[in-house]
Amino acid sequence: MGCKKAEDSFQTRLESYIMLRAEIERQKERLARLETRLFGSRRAAVSQSGSRDARRADPVGDCIAQKIALDEALTQNLRKLEFEAAAIEYAVQTLQSPLEREILRLRYFDGKMWIEIGRLVGYEEGHCRRLRNSACAALSKGEN
Image 1 (cartoon, rainbow, N blue to C red):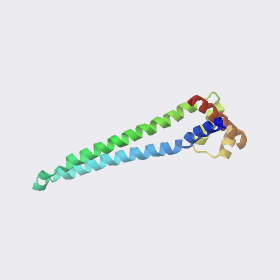
Image 2 (cartoon, rainbow, N blue to C red):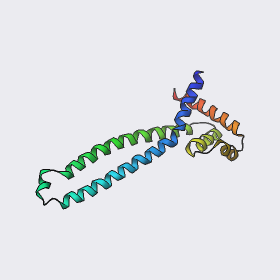
Image 3 (cartoon, rainbow, N blue to C red):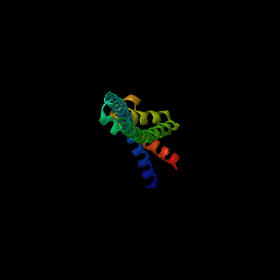
Image 4 (cartoon, rainbow, N blue to C red):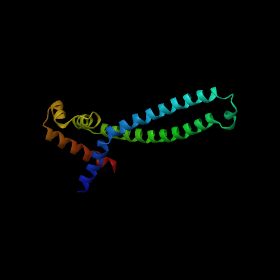
């Protein structure tokens, strides 16, 4: 049962791959929106710099400090996500069987259905699942 548990653990990591990639894209979009807000706020604050209210508060400085803090948090999170995605990709590439690599790639990186994978590689759906299980077992042994 221990081998099956390790196999399931790596399979869970594989299943999270597509979500990892989507989250990486969302984080990059958030960073881009922060840049846009920063420069938009900076322009508005600079245009008001002649008024007395602008001297009491530093909206540009506050905005920059807030942007830097958010940027650092998002960048750190993005690095973690990219590291995990790269680790999964590397692990799959270490498989000796090209067929197992292809099956994992089609299923977890490309999001194909089992029936389509079977058609693409020329095997029954059940056999493709067994090859996936074999690949996950091999990858789980490599994790230890």
